[in-house]
Length: 589
Image (cartoon, rainbow, N blue to C red; front, side, top):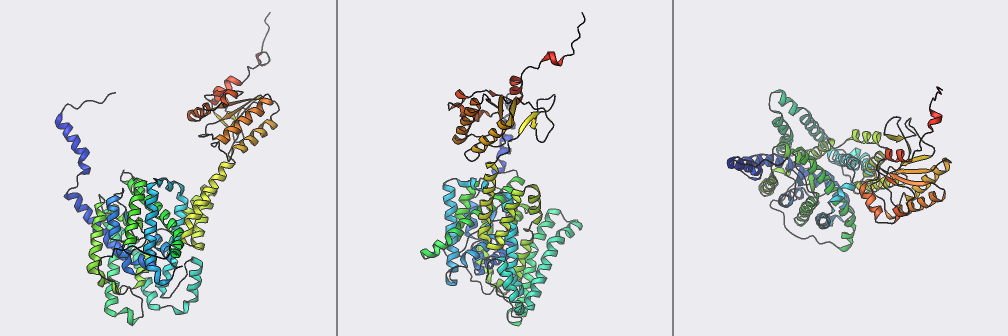
C-alpha cells in the first residue's frame, strides 16, 4: 500500500513539530541536565580523589582529569549518558604502568601515558577501527572486571590498615600485607571498617527504607547514590575537629593545590616512553571496550544507538586533553554514567555542567578536603568494587561453554597473577586461539531423513533414514585454508566406510565462505571421487557462495549437481524402488 497523502496542513505541521521536538534544547531539559550534573558531581568529587591515589598520584590529579576531558567528550561523543573521567580499573592499570619508572618521573609519566593512550585511540579512529570491540568477548570483559575489582580491593587494604605496600600483583600484595601486620594502625583500621560498614548499609538498605516510607522509587535510589558524600563530609569534620593526622597518626589527603590544571606537553626520555608503549596500547583497548560497553548498555535502555568509531574519536581526544592537563588515562565510568541516566540527564550538556562544577571545586573547595582520611577514600573504592565482582557470571560461562569458561578463568587468573595490564591481552589471544581451533576441526556429520518428512538431521544423534548408495555430509563451518585438509580427510573416511557409495552430497547450510584454499581442496575431492566413480553434489548452498564458485571453472568440472535443497537432492538421486518386490501382487486369473 502507498503512503496516505497528508491533506491537512495543520496536521502536517504538528507531525513535523513532534519529529523535531527532541532536538529543541529548552529550559525543561536544562533543568533535568542540571539536576543530573549536580548529582554526578557529588559522586565524582570523592571518587576523583580516591582514584588518583589508587593510581599512585597526588589527589588533585583526579580533579584535573575531571574538567577539560569532560568538555572534550561532551563536544565529540555519541553517548548522551556516558560520563568520562577517572575510574578504578584504569587507575590501577596506570599505577602498574608507572611503578617501574623512577618516583620523580611518575607524575609526568602518567600524563605521557594519557597522551599516548589518546594518540592510539585517535589513530584507531582514523582507520575506523571501532570493529576492534568485536574481538573482545563478553566473558573476557566480565572476567577481567571481576579480577581487576579483587585486585583493587586488595590494593586498598594498605590504607585500611595504615601500612605501606609497594607491590602490584595480588599475591605479592597479600604477602607484603602479612609481613606488615605488626605495623597496623588500629585507628585507621577502625575508621576504614566503620566507613565500609556505613557505605554497605546505605547501598543496600537506604533506598529500600525510603521506598517503604512512600518516597518515589527513582528519587529514593538517587538519594541512596549520593548519600556517601554525607559520610565523607562527616569524617572530614571529625578529622578536622580532632586532628586525626596528629592525634592518631592517620594518613589524610593533605593539602590540595588550588586552581585549574596547567596546560603542558609531557616530555620524557625515549627509554621511558618505550616502557610505556605496551601499557598504553592495553589501556587504550580496555578504555574503549569498557566505555563502549557502558554506552551501548545505556543506549539500549533509551532506545538510541552509539557510534563506536565516534567513541574512538571522543575518548582519544579526552585522553589527549587529560595528558596535556597534568592528568592520566581516563575512560567512561559505569557508576557515574548509570547515575546520570537514573537522575534524568537528557543530553551531553551534563558533561559540560559537571566539568564547570569540578572547575569550581578545584578553585574554591580543595582546602575543605585536606583532612579527609585515606582510609575513608579506600572504603569508597572497596565498596564500589564489590558491585563489580561477579563470580556467578564466571560459573554460568563455564557451565554453558568450556572454551569460553577457560578463557574467562585464564583472564581472571592473569589479572591477579601478572597484573591488570596483561589480563585483557591473555583473554583476547586465548579467545581467538580457541575460536580458530574450533574451526580447524569443524563438525561434519552424516545426515539422514526423518521418516515421512523433508527434515534431515545428524544420523549419529537421531533415528533417521539413511541410504548406503547416497551419503550426505553436512559441513557445519565455513571452509577456509585452516580446515580444507580436514574436509578432504573426512570425505576419504566416508568413502572408505561406504563400499556401495555412488553419490556424495555436501550439505552446505552453514557454509558462508569458501576461500581459494578450500576451493582447491574441493577440486581435489571432486577429482578423487570421480576416479572412484562417485559423483559429488552440493545442497543448501547460499547464493553468494554459489556466485563465488561461478567465478572459477570448478562447476564446469563438477561431476554432480548443485541442488537448491537437501530434499530435492535426495528425490533426484534416490533410485526408484523395485515395486515388484515391494507389492503384494495377487493374480486373480
